[in-house]
Length: 210
Image (cartoon, rainbow, N blue to C red; front, side):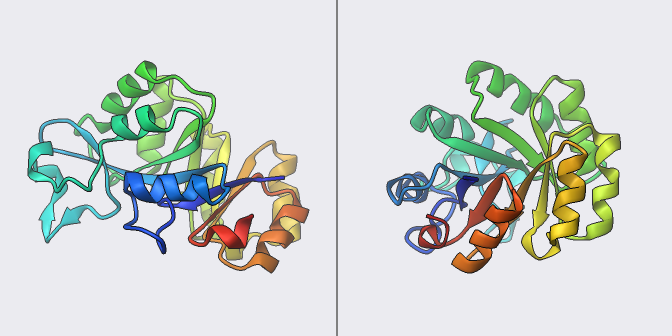
């Protein structure tokens, strides 16, 4: 049985990327959830998908400037110690503002075999690996991007679900990767991916995964 993770929690039932959405995902029977992490001006890792809030870059805001519904990553890790959590670090390639170092320090404080980090940014993954953060997952939505995986030394490949055909899954599994498919909202597709051996499914609708 693959891990079943709520996409930003349970986003149809509550505001995405909030403590409420994460709690509802677990109450619905999922194993855990995926979330997005941004970095504030004062060096705090906060859970929010977009790089901006109300048109203002989060990187230019302090933690105290954000609305109460935006949790810190530390609050999430403290609130859900038993959940499987995929932390997607948001970053721009070439950006060197210390977010990888801050994440590495935080994960040392909250060690868990059920937490792993992913990113679309290959440079962020290289930095995280050099800081000792493991396991890591490479997010991609273009099939050719998977060819970068050996250079990144990641354990997980996080593919947009439509890219995962039987031959693709078999090939990547044979190379030793664990596979996560996003975003899976159709029960029949979830079952197909389970039969193919995909290791984790991320979806907006818990009932499509359970």
